[in-house]
Image (cartoon, rainbow over all chains, first blue to last red; front, side):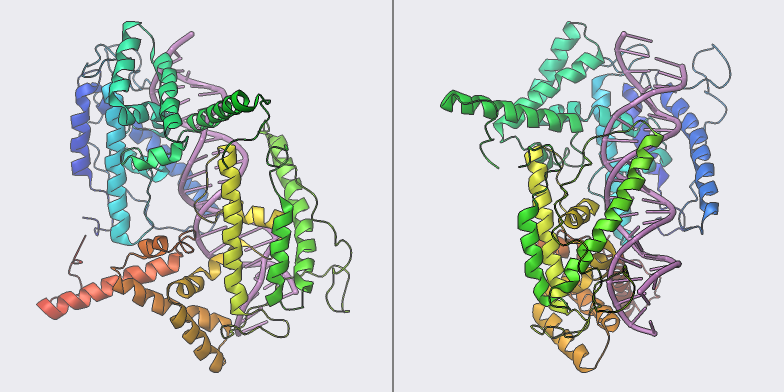
Length: 267
Length: 267
DNA sequence: AGAAGGACCAGTGGTCCGTA
DNA sequence: AGAAGGACCAGTGGTCCGTA
């Protein structure tokens, strides 16, 4: 492999991974097949557009053909129930707040599955890194667009950038304080809160962790091997920054009785 | 400063730096003034274009005004000699191969000056990093476009990306083996070689260094504090990669008598 | 209403090539 | 000819908003 002239994509182990992941899925292995089929359609479209752009200016050719082996399932399973038209848009089932260990039922996905997707992305990154090293190309240290593209080509079409970025801080809490994360999940499940509410609630304990560690959220991410490969989400960074300002202002006014406009303690 | 609503640019210390740098310049302090004037013209142009693009779609406003204090010199010094038209294009004097410590004469710049530019970029990066930290924004670890833009705003219009990227590996040799670098400069000066030839010659000793250290050129750059802020140049990376392949093939064929198509030893 | 993700956009890394 | 650098381009990080 790798030297076979194709894109260096080794499908087999990846596909296996995908199968493993299915355990937590909604329709007992249905959705990921459907999603893969959908993904392929989109990919062709994208490639067509890309090729068109190439023609506009002197093509920088190199690497574009793909290992077209994702097949196996073809026409089948395009539609899930017995319902509507032939080519309905398929999406992943929405997440619900589940306790640790709990598998979501019905057309839902649980939070263990969500976190599992982050681990899968890590595996894809490691593969991309290995390929880059073998080829002597520059080697990503983070989950980049390249990694998402690789995941898609490898058949994991249920992984996409907006989704992964959306929940990064939830995964961060899971990494940095699993007990706290678990407690939060149980509390929000009990209260019947939706995923959005749970997601919002994940910020606060993270900011508290940052407060205890000198407010350097980048350092906190980088110190954790599974978290270091993810970009710090903008909103989390902003929250840490403004909380630090608040804390500094409070501390300084409690000492000096001065106004909020005082300078920050260090920097 | 920093909280003044402007771009957070503190001009003063930067301008001072610029003055320092002038020592190695060609026209005894002339060129950098000229270059600054030229730079301002271009900047206005760029801003105009940017503003036009904004109007096309719902402006993401935020941060665009500039501390317009670069002035001081205005109409004066647009032209260097007494020569041609009013607004001739000005460029930096070309580099020549100089020995360590030697100041270039005539309309030339020497290699100490070249390396000094890398140190200046480092200073600009550090300033950009400090501003980012104060604001709680993401903090560059490398000399990025943002840093080049900052340098230009700060009046160092003689710094530009193509130039700095062009000679990065020469600076790398200077950092990693100053004695070797100095010897190479003396040899090429003596032989009367031009800058291009010297530049080309800098690759080989770097590849030799990489060979001694397991071929990991990224690790070599990252291990050196002044070098770590520069991207590894593509060509240097490629040279290391293909030399490693050659070395591996030679080693394996000398042992097994096998063909060049053998696999690499590790990976 | 709540949520998933295609697709867009501003600004990046990289360097070509029209310029002097 | 040898060299400096404006300006372009493909692909990035980031996330909005049309979709289901």
